[in-house]
Length: 252
Image (cartoon, rainbow, N blue to C red; front, side):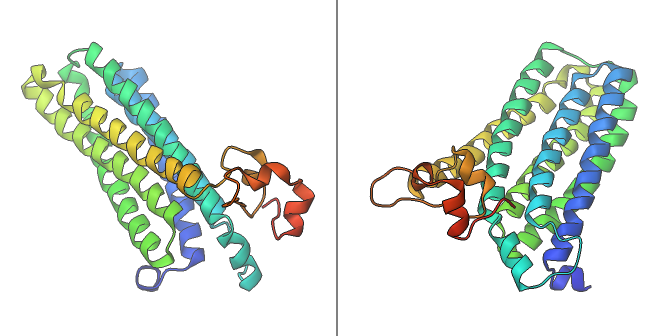
């Protein structure tokens, strides 16, 4: 299969659309189940999918190629890579915070009603398969296309896979042993901490080690991030948008 053996920008573009659709459906399903069952686990599941949607949207922008590709389009898309990568790192931090505090909320809810867990087990099992496959494709594509943004998006999907798997197992176990409700929020808490550490380390490296002006509007809205390795401050701060465009940047 060519899309597996030798994926290109178009394949990454299509994968991002599939990921967007899956995360939207997952977020909606989680909210519906939360309304029906009142389970905080479903709310956490929905929230994770919503944040994962943002990550997929950033990668879709990075590989956005609805029409034919040529060298100039590939170059334009390649210039988006660093910003998309940092954007997904920030989203990882948001995901980590959201999952962490949702896990704390799960602890306060104590035991779920075992009679309401069948639907949760069903949707979490389906999500485990879907997001597991998405994670596999994203990591594979990221390796071949050398895309850090796609790799980090794969991390978001991997977290979703872990949470889905834990939710599925926990739902089955709680039906027999209600007192072990704490397994899922415990795993979710560690996933949240891990996401914050990964995202935060990438943001720190970009800002402090690479000296990229990631906290300036101009850097995000142009295709060329410029760093000043001599003075220790952001060259972007001293340049107008027009000047940056003259250096090769644009608003895409």
